[in-house]
Image (tube, rainbow, N blue to C red; front, side, top):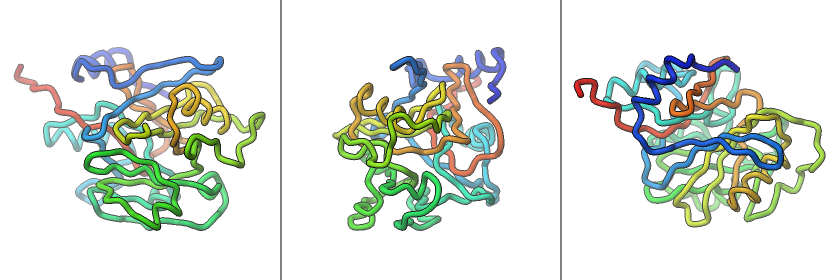
Length: 248
């Protein structure tokens, strides 16, 4: 997993606002990086540009935002995707549903039900189990379905195995009980799903958490001098802020 050079990182870090978006931490001899947002922050999902071409990378999203005087404060891969990079499961961007909710059990981690939906509403951030979401859909400005749920009402997913040997770099999202805070986490050491869920529940104290991916997990955190790259991405999720005024 390659990263931006120290010189470029220094420029990007200078360009961002002073507040800390992201930080690194160790827990139970494992390393994690986390980025926090508050309800009402400009948090968005990105899939395709104005010409219909899939963005595919943090740099391309940033270039598009720059045309409107904006930039990414941080970003992550924002959901599983097919070979053509179309989202797997529900995907809502700017209030428009581009792909439908999937409720059936299936292969892979996405189909390891219960899975869930991360929903960005006007005044709160929620993670809702997919069946419950289907019964009472909130008004999501942006939403992405993924799976499995890592933590459900304070309990681990029932099919997680504590000693599982399936270890990967993984990323996911957890939300506070009041819906006012979301924490985006990527493991910097390989973890299994049980260990990843433990970090959200026992270290962060979050009672709802959703797995995003474990083979293409990437983070863009300029203030930490980090912008992972690799094969083109499907959905991307990130916090948008004003770009600095170049004339100042």
